[in-house]
Image (tube, rainbow, N blue to C red; front, side, top):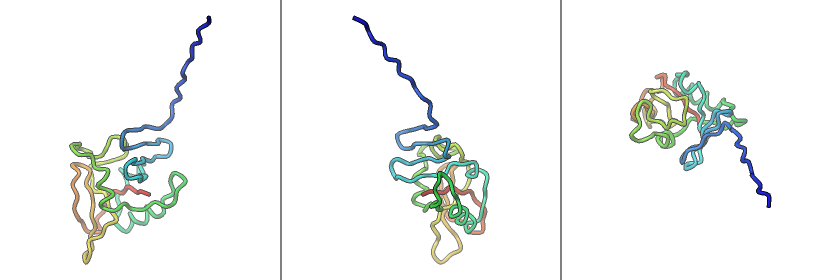
Length: 140
């Protein structure tokens, strides 16, 4: 009797997965398996510093992953990508383009010219004047 040996060929895809996230390097996106949100993860996320109005326009105009429905995330959404007990940056390592800085949210403070941000050094959040220049990470 002949024995058959099956050889399993592994193909390498530019797809990295964790329990919570799936990253696609070729599309420069990270998918959150829990919230079902897709996050931009490009070099712009650690280089561009924009005012709140500019950040909103940047996300609205963004075309990435054949998608043009990007937007600035809400304060609550931005908090979902904070990694507890992780510092400098306090974001999951699957996000390759992050910096220890303030990231805009779309959430305005009513009656004021400020909006909420999340800071990815220790996962802090707060409000800041909308004319300040901060980093941007878009979502859809």
